[in-house]
Amino acid sequence: MYAQTATYHKTRKMTTLAVMGAIAYALMVVGRIPMVLFLKYDPKDIVITFAGFLFGPLSAFGISVVVSLVEMITVSDTGFIGLVMNILSTCAFSCTAAYLYQKKRTQSRAVVGLVAGTLLMTAIMLVWNYMITPLYLGVPRSEVVGLLVPAILPFNLIKGGLNATLTLLLYKPLVKALRAANLLPPREEQADATSNPWSLGVMLVAGVVLVTCILLVLTLRGII
Image (cartoon, rainbow, N blue to C red; front, side):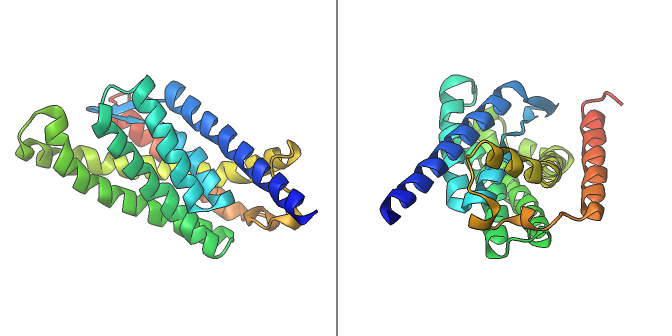
């Protein structure tokens, strides 16, 4: 009986991860937004972070690798370099946030994890863009250095801010929807951040950050 229950839960987990991976890929395909230069924002990291919050950082890592591979094969024009940069960026954000959240599944720890993920992703992408972008663009490294602060730094901070705020705003409704679809066990079987109501204050702050990030994106694109 125990073995059957364990198999059932494992199957349900794999099904949920497969669904979330498919959603992440679909969002990447239809939701890419050019921001500055060759840099584009897409919301797949939000779904991958959901997976990490629910099932741990290894699950976020697995989905990140699979989605990035499929992206490279199907729609990417950056090849292997794009694959590496996608995995590094997503894992720095999603796996960091999930790891810290798994240590203590509370709203405050989720916020700490998302902020830490944003900062780590920004730092890592500055370093890797410095090393790899000259190879991708075929330009001297000195030209890339000139792009780090005015373009690559704000892009990654805005990307992290959008991912973090949308994760905070959408995580609770997502968990409810997955439970309603029987893709997650009932609350008493699996504790998560939705066990306690998420603070209205945090949601309002997240909304302000989201609006700020959107305005910055519009500014970078020269729309406003």
